[in-house]
Amino acid sequence: MKKARIVLSIIALLSLAGGTLAFKAARFNGNPIWQPTDVLTTFARGKTFAVYGNLYTSTGATLFFSTAGLPAIVFKTTTSIPPLYVIATATDGSGDTYSIRTYGATLILTLVTTVN
Image 1 (spheres, rainbow, N blue to C red):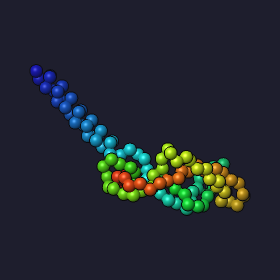
Image 2: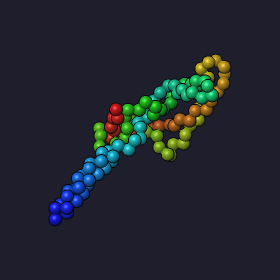
Image 3: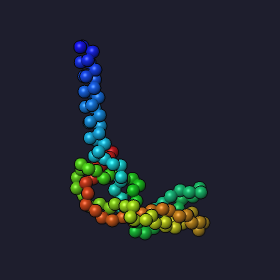
Image 4: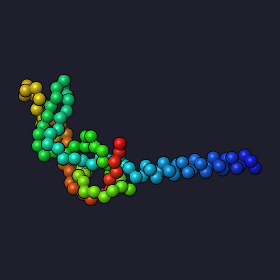
């Protein structure tokens, strides 16, 4: 009888821990909030390439979509928006070009959370 209580206590503790982790995981899905930017850069073929314009990026994101967070109007990219390929020019003045993939974005009202 004592072993049964120990086993049941262990099962109860594991269930509690699993439920807690599942609750926290459901609040955060890892999809970043996109931010407007006027420059995108990348490093390829030993050079830095840059493109300028009205663009969006998720680089350096600290806000993420959530199911339990603060309401906010933010930029989101979706699968219905095809990727855009923009031509970047080498910053060293050589005239070399490189294609950078980015995405358009739309404004939506959603819940967000921060990740530090």
